[in-house]
Length: 354
Image (cartoon, one colour):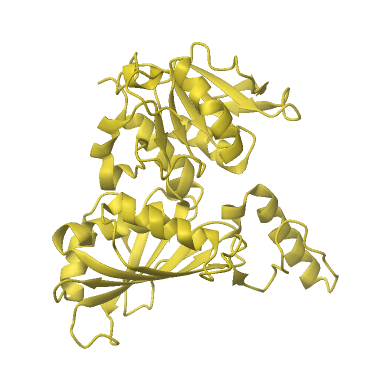
């Protein structure tokens, strides 16, 4: 990891060297890679060229971008020559091996894996929340965990006005968080269940159709928290700039194809009314208020899927806190977009030469 002032990353411009950067996507054939392609096209990102990189078994496939067929190339150490922006979405092992190579070749890396998220010299960025921290990057920028990214879009406007003293979160995480293979397993197992057929799980550890279970990350035997929960705690603190913020969390995998939901109870250092919280969230960047009590209509994965904005609603006083300092809300965001690809492209957009 690059950490010393004399390292190659320290000499890089904080922006791209050109107004039309050459872009590479590492892990282009995966679920997030596909969304990165679509985000770049849909948002008219001003790229000069596009290189699609993946493992040897995917090399030779073709993917469509802006009406053109692009051949996927095998990822090698020579893949980053002439590249200005490298969007990584191929797992932490790949990132740890190739990110420094890309930076030394002159690229800025935006990494979707967990590899660098807690490195003190690598900014962990949600542009609507802590975009100013991009000024400190030294070649590598980390994209947060999907839950942390989605949650902090809703939490930041509240925290800016009324410092948060505690969070309690329960998540309802979709198949997309476990990748394209898990999404397919949900489709197949649901079809089998409805047809009265047996289905042996291959990707996830438990039957998925019409079931939910504790997130499939490994469980820390001492604390009882799984790796997903520990990531969300650490990354939420870092993104909000609240290193000691108490966070309680339970992460659950639910049989939904894409878009994560989360029930969040926020405790402030002073009394905050639901009306005040709603006012802060109504016009906040990256958020869409869905809070219709009369119609019992609140954020849902079916409406968040494919949407750039994070949906927030069900805003109400926590009746379990008689002090009036706690507000409950429900948040849903597309894991593949704001939880991954869209956030990475927004980071890249913030680095464009204006």
